[in-house]
Length: 356
Image (tube, rainbow, N blue to C red):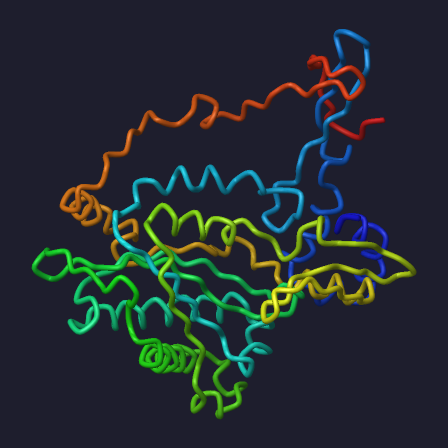
């Protein structure tokens, strides 16, 4: 069972009910997911040179929210991050948006998500400059996530942070191996900066004032070397709300999917109506052209000269710009194998419209 099939069968009802109120990004995601790897997008025709078996290979939609697309991009992204690696311990720091702000966030995603990034990154950098903790400019890469494993709306940002920073005197200051900054102090600064930024918008009065008095959730833990940290983060960059492998069945208009409970680590099953499944899925579609991966501090594009200086000071290995595989920079794809005899198949034509 695939998400595409659910959207094909029940999407028309959903659009008839909510289509006029849906953001353009959600409408496009629905269309792309339905058309992905179908004749609508065109493709190629292959023939087996041994048994004359024919195969039609259709194009992918390349929508970042499609469960069929993007799964092979993590390795390429990791290769591109090599120049950012430092031979120091790194930390995973997670900032979670309080429940009282989620209704406003869901209806004003671009504004609130941008504030979430700005407030969290500024709070972390401010505390990292404190001599008691790091005493320098750290490097940070953040990824926005908006879901739980059960597809519940739960916006949060994961940051991979260098365990050390560049001081104002140009010296490298290491953090402790098991501690970056105090999370309780960090949550207070995060809350204050978020509040200040939200006050500059028309959304502030829509929020329950009690949220500014409660404790906000921030979590920090060491995650190993730079290479290990980026490998840890890579799936978060390209993961979509739910993979097709987790969808168990669609029966009588109800969808059953499995997920792992974060508290017990046990596999559980949820059954919801097709409409509710589509609603849960689509609320995680990001606004068009929204940047979900952002770089700050030493890792920001404007500070790469400082990062280079730090790499040299720490004795980091040089990056071989020609080390990428020859086919890594091209769109080369291997010819498919015949499903009947296993022989390599030959491309004989392209499909620009609907295939057979």
